[in-house]
Length: 81
Image 1 (cartoon, rainbow, N blue to C red):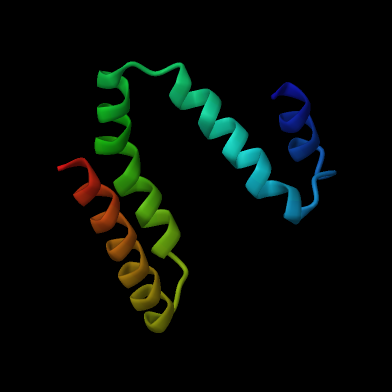
Image 2: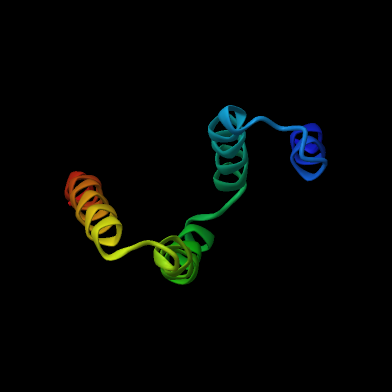
């Protein structure tokens, strides 16, 4: 984890390495969270992440992202009910 962070900070990381690095970071982060921590994360960080994702997109891109996100989130949430 530290090695990945160092690579990213030094700009040595290739863009194609980012998904793997992000998956590793998320796996580690969530494995260390309690259930309450996960709920708090979703409640506070998801809206902030979405604001940042949409910030510089044009209207068509925003529409595409919103529709894809809603579809995937609906599916995942439906699996939990």
